Length: 265
Image (cartoon, rainbow, N blue to C red; front, side, top):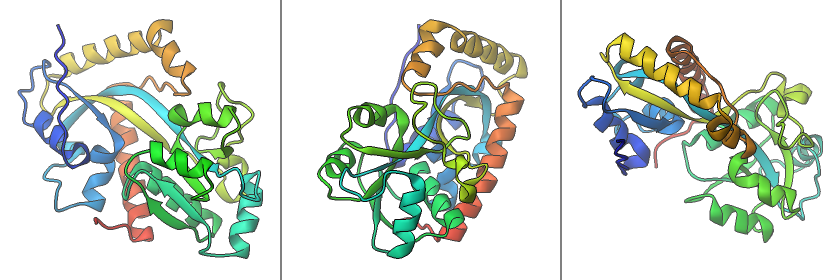
C-alpha cells in the first residue's frame, strides 16, 4: 500500500523539510518539484533550512514539462521574432504573467529577457487559471506557462504560442517552434520537472532499486505514454545523472536570480 500525504505550506518548502526529517529506510519518499528543491534557497533563503543537494537522495525524474511563451490573441506578434521586434520598439511597455515570483516560470522568462536583450514587465498571479482567462481577454500581453496545462487553449486558437523552452519541438505540437531556434536563444533549455527523492543516507541499494522500478514504469505506455500524450517529456535518469542535473541547474538558477534581482516578497 502507498499512502499519499499532501503537505502544504510555503510553496512546498514544508513538505521537503518533512521528507528530509523522515527515516532513511526507503519507506518515506518525496515527490518534489523544482521550486522548493532548486529555486527557493536563492529566492527565499530565510525560509529554507535545508540544502537539497546534501539532505536528499535523488532517485529519478518522474517527468519534465517544457514551458511555453503564449500571447493574447490581439497582440501584434505571431512569432518570437516578431515579439522581439515589438518589445524592442517599446521597452517596458509589454507585460508577462507567471504563477508567482521565484517560480521556474519566472526564472525562465527572466533568462529569455536577459539573453534576448528585452524589457518586459512581470505580473505575478496566484495560479495559472486566471492567467489564461486574462490572456484570452487581452488583459495581459504574454505569459510563461507549462505546456501540459496550456496546449488545449493553444490548439483551440484562444491564445497564441510563440515558443517552447526545450531545444527540440514537442512531438505532440510540432508546429510550435523551440526558442532555441532563435539566434538570440541558441541552446536554450529549461523545464518544469517533478522528481522522486528519498532522505539522505538512504542505502544506495534501496535508491537504485527504486530508480529501476521508476524507469520501468516510465517505459510503459500506461505511465510514460500518458505523460507524453499530455505534452510532458521523459528523462529516465540514473540517481547519479539526476544528481548531476540538479547541481548544474541550481548553479544556473543562482545566477538567474542574482542577475534579475529576484527577491522574496
